[in-house]
Length: 361
Image (cartoon, rainbow, N blue to C red; front, side, top):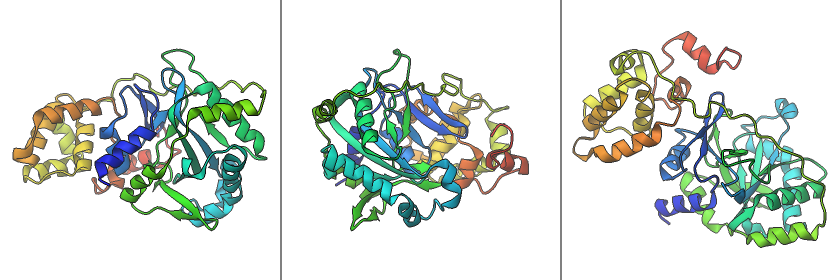
């Protein structure tokens, strides 16, 4: 199976709002007014950015639902999140109860469930559909699941319909990306003899998606109908969108000023002047920073022309620049974590990026 086909499978399964997706920043998620496509997916899989989907489309339907089985925040202090086996031991009973409920009580076949270790506090159980499912039916199915369990789980979608065409609804982080809070990539897994078998490597994780069998959404509707009347679902109001429609933050000065002050960008520029090609990650982060200064676009084109030489394609580069424009500039902490930057240039910058109690972090 080639990688291009695997990306197509990913994009076919994980479909949300058609004209928006969400970007995780230092202060939460921000809406991006673009369709999520292969360009953004590659950044997500490479760990250069972390994205999420708004679950309902513009018709208030969904292509998937997800059950989130997490360690409660009030109990997280006693659990080592990095110890994946230990985390499974803590959540095994709840995860098994969810899977048995889906299969034995609600008729969802195991081959239609995608299990994800989120890299955070727990697990996601994904179910996909061959055609869009009405959001109200999805929410009622979530009520049925919760009615069958003696503990609480988080269910997506949280609302059955959008208030208007401008509403985006709730979102969920896409799998196989980097969990920014815990610094760990999510992975898919299967259960063998009641223990998790984590899938190793990005290629194998992507190939695993081909084994998932989407459900006919009518089967979910029949299950909901069979359970009879349910109490009205509680109203859900999504959190206020952060910086929705806000302009890209701008740095002071011009490209020369930024190249002089920032070690990471200065080092990348020197690499380009030596005629050494950037990695995909380096090219993305260089452009994502330089777009926040006047005349940054010209600097990006000039720098990429230097490092790619004869293979440089101005038209294609401009297309990708336009996709990066609505994103937020790469943070210093991300540049350091990716080793694009050797270290923080100032202690004040390190504190601002690493200390969750520092102002404006």
